[in-house]
Image (cartoon, rainbow, N blue to C red):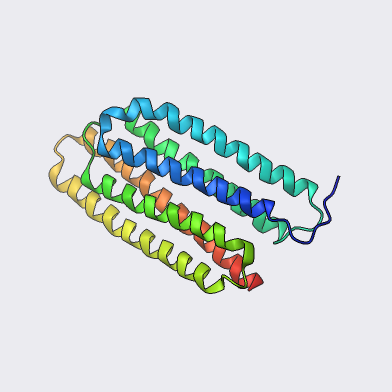
Length: 208
């Protein structure tokens, strides 16, 4: 039942695969932000991505249950796996809001935040690709996590500016409520990227 290998790169390969689903979800969101009329069609795509991401997460957890000696702490593997899986859920939730609310033309700030999410998820893929050799890649890993934090800070700035724009310029209170909720969900997703980054940084500090 148990695998006694000291090194098991399969965990890291699965992390990268899971991170790629997070990025693919961000790509779908970006396509919707460029053309909001595609939102209904993209909903099925992101639901499929979420199911595929769940399957990868299940593989990681199954592997964790079958492995006696893991390359990093079991608790870290569990937290990282679920963190990545939750990222796709955040994106699905944002797109669901756009569809359910019939949100209409995309607000400039929402499109800008989605571009930042694309960058952040790309950096997350990079970080997990480097995680196989923590000691060798320590500097690059810390640089990557720092970049994700900077992107999250820029996301906060864009979010605050767009919320102010909503209250200044949107006359229809229903439209304001819709987009405020969508923007908050995008901001939560950016925060989640930083949460994953912080977990990676913690692993680096522990093992490098």
